[in-house]
Length: 486
Image (cartoon, rainbow, N blue to C red):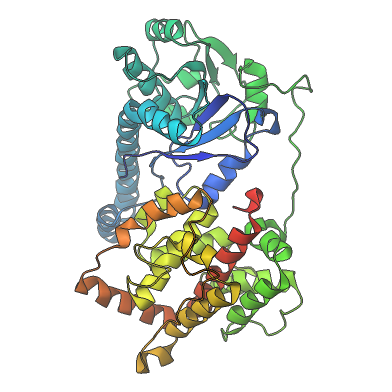
């Protein structure tokens, strides 16, 4: 597991105070969930810097190969024994994540201080918000901070624990309260039955803790805190919240739609807002698949729907009448290229696209290609002409066809706007450079693996069209630079 936090600053940032949010178990584990968590931060907090600290918390449904094999073997002998083995395995998995939360907490403030120094050096104080095992991360961080009073210069303001899956004694709360510049708020609910699975501990998220500001949330289940975060902030009086005096149960404004095409805003909205030239490139690559409809040129709706239908299993999509959301397709392609372990370093969709597309170019043309390996894909792409980048993607698309195995795949010479590629000004260029460093120095075995992966891309329905289409969408997202679509 990656021992580092992935910090992500939310859009519309301002102020000299940072609110740092830490999720719990089975949360923040993939891009779709990270996007959902970011949407939970209310607009009333936009007068502060809001930062998510993603950590490898694990997910109850994600079995590793050893666990999956063991449970499957037992289930073949006896179904009930297999079910019991699965429950026992998940209990061990949660306990492992619980221990990891404690260890991650001991490094939280040091890693956060480095991030703030690099990205927000003017921050004078941080407020900490932890949910479930995220609360355990926060408590572990503060207890370790108490032992090393001379470490760092961070000033801690308010601390909000929500459904905290950790013990916190009144003595420890009193000691922490004397050290921080704010209060410790304990948002808890006796109706949170999930915390009963935190065996061996009396979770602070279920009962009042001495020397903490008590914030009872009657009727709240374990998963209610993020969707109703503004209600929790308002009731607690959390210092980072300045939301005025609206009614306590006033719902957050949301736009609901049952249509999976309109709901996939990372794809539909991007296609609608991008230029016709770029959208035509997406159409061209989607239409290259025999599985796609030919009636998509002038309809963003149909193009989005056909793109979604190319993801996943065609028969399953046909049966349910819809395809996969864009982030699910990106995850499918990341698994195809064996990039799942690198996804922790991606807090935005555009970072995930950069990681994936660079790997695709490297897999097709080797580490020396300008859009793969050690080169910074964002800086290179930004320096190219639009026509030059489209030519590179066309070459990538050709390399993913069966015909490419009877000829030598070559990429055209890059067409730059200037002689020397300029460094991209976006923060993404630094992020993607570090994320892609693991692709350097391929050994022959990996080259063989790349060839096999490309062959699978050529024969799997839709893959040879999806990959170049994603490369164009990546370019569109970069050029559009809309914070809500990154």
